[in-house]
Length: 129
Image (cartoon, rainbow, N blue to C red; front, side, top):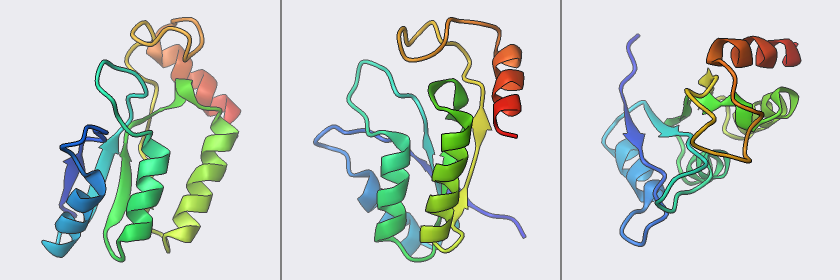
């Protein structure tokens, strides 16, 4: 069965309310909301895991998805535990999207030294087994 959803920008500006947007999407009948994971940038934004947890707590039916969670920023075993916890607390509403992050050059100090994304992906998969 196809699922339809909306992408929510995790903006922390005073003009944005990602949780209200998720609640509105649920009221409109969407199946999921996804939140992208960019823990760096010029504009203030919410941290993805915290925001997904808050959305799951403030909704009842809609699924919460990470729109490609950047593994170089997180320990694989801890990420797996966090996913398991959020999935249990939300009654199975987590959709986990994982990725290797396109580049670490844009976020100095927040990831291992820059290496090719395929190498980072292989390394993170070994750590999650």
